[in-house]
Length: 312
Ligand SMILES: Nc1ncnc2c1ncn2[C@@H]1O[C@H](COP(=O)(O)OP(=O)(O)OP(=O)(O)O)[C@@H](O)[C@H]1O
Ligand SMILES: [Mg+2]
Image (cartoon, rainbow, N blue to C red; front, side, top):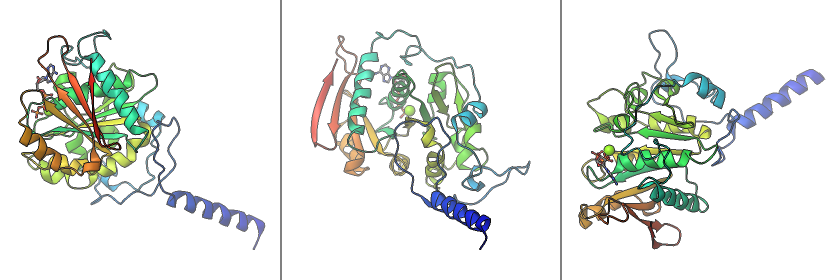
């Protein structure tokens, strides 16, 4: 065997070994293109009218998922956020509620020391308990830390609100990706808050339960997660519909929102039962009626099995 042939064979073996390697869990966003990894084959390949392979049909290594590709391909839009509820867009770091989100952020970093934690599903038992409010503000407070890159996803395909809160378009978005009609970068957008990326819900669809269960969300997250420090996913209420428990399977942890003096205890318990115990990383008590403090947060520590209270 010639030396050139040997060298080529060795290189081929090394490349094969690299491509077969497992993904190492990583919490720091990489500035490099991620190491190629073996990903599950997505369901059903699709090709666009222009003949471009779409997300679900792309071979695993077709796109370089680098920061450069993200910045080049993700459109920059002019968001007009509702500054009354999007607490970190008005540059007042002392605004009411901001400190509670900083406390929540510290709790999550603390939890992350003990378990892999990057993809967080935010849910609650019932409608209107503050899931979208919590998801959006949590994503904002996380990017306030220098160099942190965050992806916020509106996976509430039944009652999407995040695009309204951020003052931006809702489509293309997650539903389009799940249907195989848009790729990762086409559905992602960024506004004026540096390092905050957003995937809106996408076009209205009639079969949200089937779409979120079709396996493509997991595939999407696998493809983009190395580019982000945190991925925060908003969801529908857990008791009336099953979407949240399906979505949770693609995430590392679940943050449960409970609305103070509103959520019935039995409903909160029922919602909790929708998720495996180890998936629950915390409980956010939203909207306390104490004038002096707009929110109080209770945090359930999964590892130590105790409840701690965080007040501001
Ligand atoms: N702590 C809070 N302070 C001020 N406004 C809040 C707070 N929590 C929620 N809201 C407001 O209450 C309304 C309902 O909140 P939100 O949309 O976040 O609930 P949700 O649980 O996502 O509802 P849905 O189940 O319909 O998606 C919104 O107008 C939101 O801005
Ligand atoms: Mg909501």
